[in-house]
Length: 102
Image 1 (tube, rainbow, N blue to C red):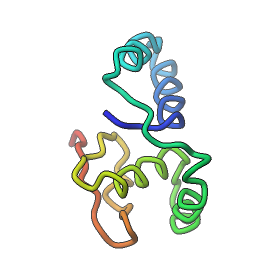
Image 2 (image 1 turned 30 degrees about the vertical axis):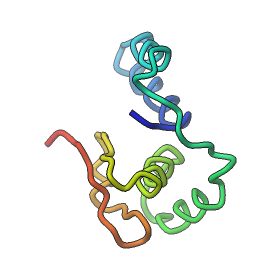
Image 3 (image 1 turned 45 degrees about the vertical axis):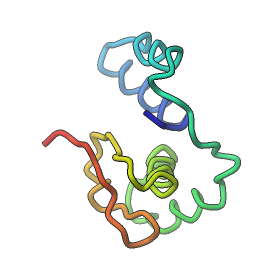
Image 4 (image 1 turned 90 degrees about the horizontal axis):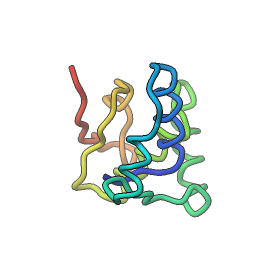
């Protein structure tokens, strides 16, 4: 699974809010199940453009990172609980394949 540090931060926060610690999350990182595959610094211009495009939606930096990863890896799927990924588009007009519970 590919992600970015902003997603790890948001996931750890949500886990804590729900009363869980982040040990399992970090175990996945340590084992390589989850890999950091996007540098915010290297992708800053693209991320800023996405945040600007979706300025009327509650797009977080983590969301922008996942949209950008979907552009860089078009055969992948985004695993999310965020229904805004039904609205976000990669490359401006292409639907993002998502894996999301109903």
